[in-house]
View 1 (cartoon, rainbow, N blue to C red):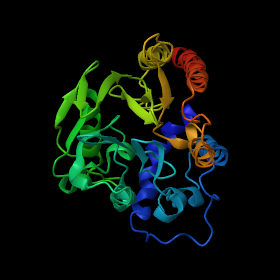
View 2 (cartoon, helix red, strand yellow):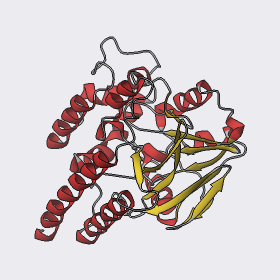
View 3 (cartoon, rainbow, N blue to C red):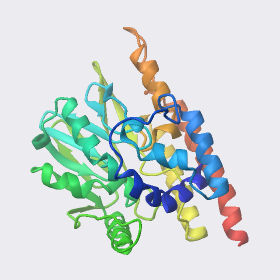
Length: 323
């Protein structure tokens, strides 16, 4: 799965040009019934092997109605406002709201409408925290900036650099996209406090050199849990063994956060839902009965995911070193 993501990022914008011009109407027959993680991963694996975007998959990736997911709440202070293929999270505090990642291209209208459907005033968003410079996570920043009058956009220096450079390099080509000028630059260990919550920056290079993860608190009734949004899971755009080694170090660091004795991370709110069975867990959460545990509070599951990521990264490192 990790290797497939690189092919997706390299070729998706070619099909996005067509997708950006599509209407919001659902296709006559959507590629998937809902947002099933397994079948989506299978199609991406097929795509990765061929290196050529299947027309039906490209259309699905860029048809807002086929990608649409009704906003929903995994926790009392968190709303999901993303689409099937890319996540976006709203985290509410008693003094404003934080948006994590921005979607892109054909979903610029979708993210605004989803935010409004949660009852959130756009003026209440104080920070937009972006995980890394890939277009599917920051491509919507240009459209959102004039609509969020009180928001400051946040990323690591490496994240800003890779986003600005990638957008600039795309100009004049078939996959052109724009990026805002850098605003707030954060580094590892930085904390941004807003209302009754604090967002801690964890630099986790590997997916890209500028990738950051964000750690914060989520509320489930009277219980508070530590959550993390890991900035990137794929081993794409690899420049060589040092980047894979950095990825392994980042994965090990996340494991340490989950195993911490004081306020360990128990929740992963992912950047790509199909990588963590997000929609399947959403359905379980919707059927949750009073007194039952929250399916998203799953430190064991997160540890298993981290172990799988590390195993794949070790294998990738062997391949990189053999080149």
